[in-house]
Image 1 (cartoon, rainbow, N blue to C red):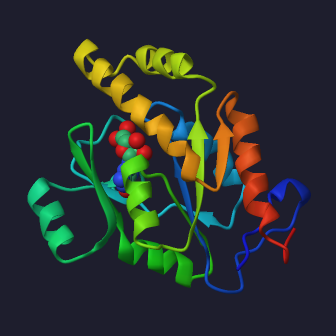
Image 2: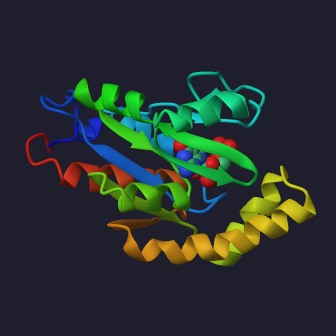
Length: 204
Ligand code: 5GP
């Protein structure tokens, strides 16, 4: 199984065989989205199948690209029909990884990148999914708290819950295959790209 190498050195193509599943997880506020935004152009053979969520779209988010935004009844129906590889309740909203979308990406020979919270990642592990698990960690718990505060999207109560949750989330790092510290977004993205390329003897 192979993943295309970073395009820093030129040619990149999708995998000749079935693509891999890459799980990039970590605590809320650690910067998964910003690292992924830097990572995607480095690895053109990577695709991000949109997850489903019951939360409302934020300004600028596109339905079907950032997430598929569905109501709770629809989400529950999909869950009953076993359409999700994992689901989680994250800060009051449901999130789920579409089995079908992940399969479609992998069957086309692309590697599928997921960014579940740590509960979702643990479900994938427990289900025995053949994924590469990468944990994105903050430089320190204090810095994570500062980042959550600076984001300014949470009330003081929500911030307290997220900070407390973060303590448990950080403890999860121990079982992942790789831990990358998000001290600087570009550096962290490059490190993730290198980890993925290392496992690509055919293309690196
Ligand atoms: P946000 O709503 O701010 O984009 O994401 C909130 C949290 O939900 C983040 O920790 C993110 O990793 C998590 N999340 C996003 N998509 C999924 C998913 O498909 N499954 C799970 N379990 N968590 C997700």
